[in-house]
Image 1 (cartoon, protein in one colour):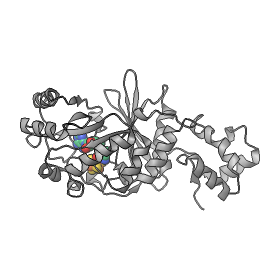
Image 2 (cartoon, rainbow, N blue to C red; image 1 turned 135 degrees about the horizontal axis):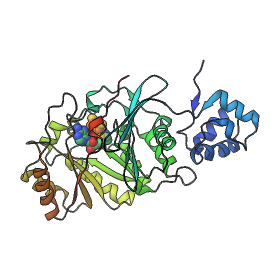
Image 3 (spheres, rainbow, N blue to C red; image 1 turned 90 degrees about the horizontal axis):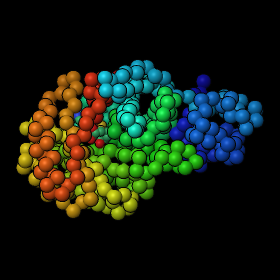
Length: 341
Ligand code: SAH
Ligand code: SF4
């Protein structure tokens, strides 16, 4: 039996084409679209303005099913992590971080990751495949279904490198930003990249969402040790691309993520160098303390070191925060996601 086509990740134009392929018309697609994205319909049967005959065809050939939730873990701090299973039996993890006034969800873009950063648990898992745009969007639907309030912020900081799955990422962004679909504002969505600033990076600026770059070091020597991808896209190239992004995307600043690893990149000299290379780039620095995982070789910097590092950046006029880690106890924090097929 041929598997049904999942519609959750199809922007309207693609939905129309798909409908034409299965013998329906563009107008049907226009009717179905808000049912999926605004009303969060979970079956075609509830789409009351569609003739019964069309609902039947849709039920036979298409689906708006969410992935199966295999495990849901709740952290002491309220963070939730779900292990979701897709049709081909591959799994991913996705995270909800509830705070007083907001609900942030952390989305995965790939199964595993090919970049292989030394400090990241996901990086120890082989790259299996990209998620389809429907699988990316299904994580939004999954949390939307389970939440009483609404999702306020979306970060692409889960498993995988979003800019290496650009086509599907861009379909998802199109749906999230579309005011006839999920209607998120640009500044509520953040895409984090390890610095994949190839061809698609130029196109990506058109969405105008917030960009976070995982910099983690202020010299190529150190960065290459932590992130082998630095041999392809080095710091100078990344900073040049970041400036271009600011211009083309019309965003106010770039966030640079800087993971503090004990005795590796957390000295005062590291901080001074970082301030030097970020000088003149409108940016914020998020200092991240290392989240341990089974088998990790690094150690986290002390809070004292982190504060000192932060003060050096602040004193040089760089907006800096030390990012609070959430969900460490259930391995739901940055760099702790891993799924098993
Ligand atoms: N692949 C993208 C997005 C996912 S990772 C990227 O690398 O940017 C999200 C953030 O978590 C990145 O800044 C990443 O460097 C950081 N991270 C990875 N492993 C970590 C760990 N063990 N502790 C803390 N942060 C980590
Ligand atoms: Fe991949 Fe990001 Fe982890 Fe690096 S930090 S291995 S790019 S998920």
